Image (tube, rainbow, N blue to C red; front, side, top):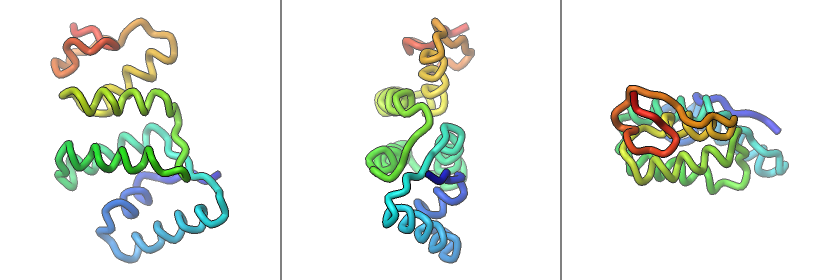
Length: 131
């Protein structure tokens, strides 16, 4: 198994630098041919979502489509996959950011009764207590 950094994943997704995008595609295709999974950490996933939102100004719909694409790729393995999928479902239906929901899901998986926050966008979310 190999792990992808967010810059490699973003070049593959965005194709904004043809040289680096080609290298990224090459690595991913090499792993696909050899049936070697690629690992995505939660930090890489969150950083990717942040860059798509803040740097590339993608809409929530576009970001949802990108995450959905990643989650359906058999080649990819995700750190805290169950938490990632739950956070994705919450992000799809709510107004807070994806990393916020992922924080709540990882904390719940670790046995926390809640995550305390000042983020008003998380009001009413079952994993959070608004202070």
